[in-house]
Image (tube, rainbow, N blue to C red; front, side, top):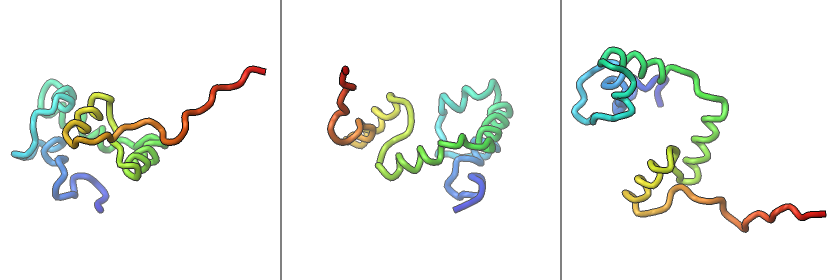
Length: 103
């Protein structure tokens, strides 16, 4: 789609990283925790966005997307499930695994 989030029309990047006005952004506790003042939060956010992703992170995102699951804390997953009225984070499918047999 785009090479950088700042290039995407509907991205919150300009508001979060550059301090641009955006009436759609709310006070996000995660974002406000990035620094004690606006410029510090913007710098930290820019660095976070520009940091390389861990090697397995893309695979994790793709798998969650393909399975219709949510990535995040258990609390976040429960909140999204409650809003949508369906289970998004689930157990593995199939039969439960057997324990190792003692010899």
